Length: 394
Image (tube, rainbow, N blue to C red; front, top):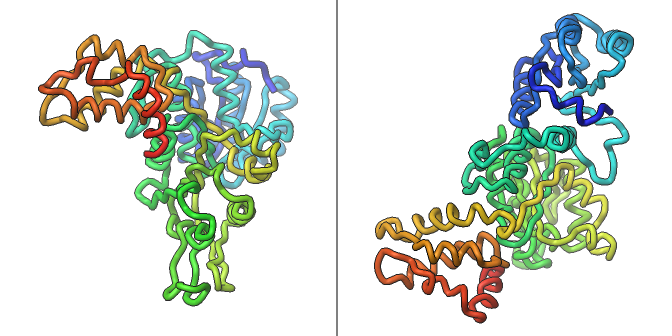
């Protein structure tokens, strides 16, 4: 592939998208532009060749179905006249058909690779706080969140599975919800399954459903949560807690897009986009044979890692004000500068969820409209030890 420097030019298009599908062209160009990679549309093969003549493009997305030129013929011309240009064919879903060397165990997608190249080659182009636009439902413009927001927006329009990782309380469910809201599936079901909260004995029936008489107590048939997400998004939270036996069944569903209710021979196809999240080290679990490798690679097609709150301290004030408005909107409470300094100097082992709990508690303890440092309780050793446990239980 071309070097990272190939994507550093913003004056000429770095990427050309050649397709007769206008919606597909515009979507890919928009995604690349959001990642600060200049891109241009080409309506067909002749248009693509004309743009190649007059630009420093180094990468082309090529739809095999062009209105004027055969794609193989166009590829031959490009390789002869523009030998330094890489061409990625789009599959029938409008996704890049990745070269074999990219189909590694890390399962990196094209857009993540381009994003990393561009960031490495153009440090000055990294967004500053004022350019960072949070995802829907999220607060904060810290630099460490810019990559999270960008990657979520890039993958949202697609059906690729996403694995969201990060410490407990860092906002993984909010990212999953935002990806759903920014996707074509917005308005359709967003079904959350907490894999750690459902007893193992009930998990299969909850996920796949059952028919009447399938087991003792099954007095009526029930559609499973996976089927209930048809047309929308299924969010597997705490996916690292899936029992091994259930992991095989979930993998089969991911591979074939089919569910079979307990006690039934009927197989039903479902259209579901899958997002997953965990705070566990799944690679370590794989080495211990606690998590299936094939399921990991199936879920982590597009990984997004959230930082701990201690890595986004610039967001603490904005997050605290946001939570305070929710807990005490009618009282118009404010946080003193001393209290804010206490918040910013605390380690936050429970991350954003812990901060939310601390602000809720302080809004109750404060006598009046002002939250002082003593209302936060962050100096107490008991409080520091207790809050993370409380955060995990939430």
